[in-house]
Amino acid sequence: MTSDKLKNLVRNWIRENEDQLVKLIQSLVKIPSVSGDEFKIQDFVYKVLKDMKLKPEMMNPDLEVLQKDVDYFETTSYSRVGYENRPNVVATLEGSGGGKSMCLTGHVDVVSPEPLEDWTRNPWGGEVDGDHLYGRGSGDMKAGIAAMLIAVKSVQELDIQLKGDIQIETTIEEEDGGVGGNLFLRLVRPRVDAAINPEPTYHNLGVASGGVMYFRVVVKGVPAHAATAHFGVNAIEKMMLVVKALQDLNVKRQESTSFSIVEEADPRMKGHVTTINMGTISSGDWPSTVPAKAVLVTRIGWPPGETREEVQKQVEDTIATIAKNDKWLAENPPVIEWFGWYARPHLLDLESPFVKLMKKNIFDVIGSEPKFTGGSAGLDTRFFAHRNIPAVTFGPYTERIHSFDEFVSIESTVKTAETIATTLIDWCGV
Ligand SMILES: [Zn+2]
Image (cartoon, rainbow, N blue to C red):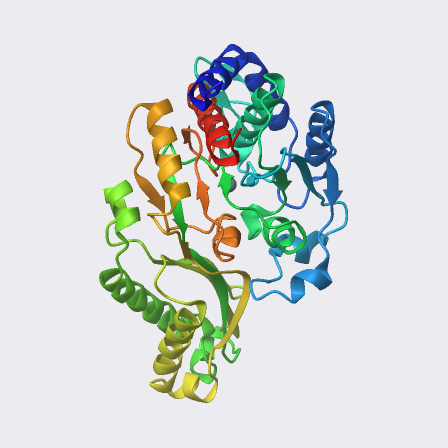
């Protein structure tokens, strides 16, 4: 049979089995899996893969292996709960040989649904209303995981013998940087020839991810009675100098940084492809004491084009400069600590055969040319790209991820599965 006929067969099979796909997304959504608490859902995926007659394995991250890698950083969920009982799940559908391999990868962890009072649906309910399936993680990215599993199932159920292997993996802690998840698997699993990460891209083709780093600034003051505040040094007021300097740096960076892929996919991003976000600020005990310490925590994100070291130096130089111009800060310089997220950006070769194949298959299923997207947030896909493996992000339509009443479009998840399945046939060969 020609591959075109096989592609029609898998597409039909997926459409006929939409119920199965919806049930699978619902089952995944009904298992809470906030980063750090991934065991239950991974146990469920393990059983699904077993029912598919695959030989799944659970792989717990090994800190010693991770720490040797240039992209290692301690994630905030590791700091909180460690890596015990936080397995990644992997399985391989073996090909007959002589074909190219493909990895289908998705993260099972989700962000907290708090504050719950904003939700009008049960965040762990998987409620279906028309084309929408609601719940925390429905769009980011349990529908994508269900789509990739159903795509593999379509190939199996139709007895299509692929030449190349399919590696299937569900990973932990992506929301937190993906270190013990996708990075760990890249260090211990066989190298693949391409990968698809079905994060929600609204059927655009994700070819880039942004760099992301967290840092904390600590400024010291001198405590004093408020009535004699001039005997002390107010840490909040000194921190305001740091905040102002970082705001100015943010404006300067936004004016001088562009990244056409993000801007063309979403014109609202023009002039905002890099951001320094003031995340938390804490200081002071009560109105009658001059605060002696202030702590600012921020996230800086940026598109491909700058290294982590260049960005760090810019931030550190900016803070050093304002400190030099203030008598107190010159003698008591703000302390900068980089912690958590420490991700390099990535950008794929847009002319690579795999990117072209994905574009064609998306067009065939969706009916329109996909836009390229990516570059403003960190993604697990980067761990493949940094190893020169063509890896794309491609997934369904969703709204309000990381917010209340998150939902995913069922129809777009069906189309995601169809696109993945047809790409498996083309890429792995029959
Ligand atoms: Zn995600």
